[in-house]
Length: 337
Image (tube, rainbow, N blue to C red; front, side, top):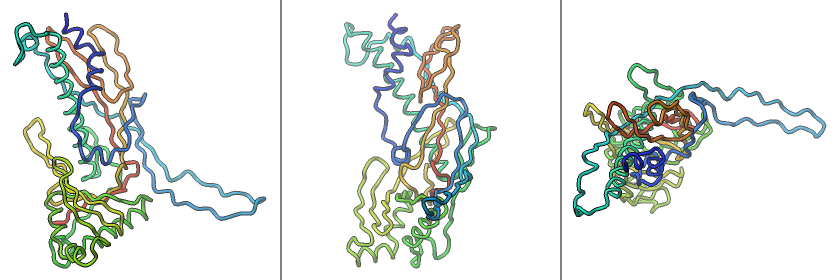
């Protein structure tokens, strides 16, 4: 039967590589690499910036011993993403809109399968971007209710107040960024180069008296501004040459299964960070491809399979992502308005 052929694991995994996914700003900007591992438990790396130097010595003198004390690790078994869709057998046999009764049923079935895979993968990547946003704004990678969340430590959060608020006439966003940049470089050995603001904080940044004055006086030497939308929900604001920092605003929301809507970056918040400074590891997946078969292991970012049980078929995506900063504490989340 075509359904069995089309919804095989091989067909589903081929479809996985072909579907087109939405371009997600945070994920694309900050994730430098994704890698699947042959382990269920993954290492949580914690390190500080490498700033050790050694004295110069003569050719016949002893060298300098470097202790391995700036690197620690723990292990963590990532939880599983498991979105699924029911396979509607009746739908598979229905005539598709715009086709005649002589239409190719196999083509219809492939189209439905591709749509199922695209929806599951879109849900998965949006979930991963949500997890990344929570890590950026809280310092903690969320876990299921009742499970231990992962705290990488060294989280930097600043709540501005009084004359420091960017809506205040006396505030200096540039000085704030300089201070945070120097602090992160000193403590972690990483230099931020990207400023990501909510739309509201972005508006306060553009209207800030210091910024407006710099634009009048320096003609792009201290700061250049050319706001434009680069993709849905994302705007490029400008560039600050003195600290090699590109400024964006970003707005996106997620809806959970309870119908609660969450903004990925709070409306009063911003993130100062180095691009491509996070990675996503994937733990080993163990799964049965058919009822009655032994479980198999898969070293993949995502596995898509058909599940048959009690005459009910569903297509399911399995993934165990573990999102982590390459250097914990190498960014700052701040509330500026």
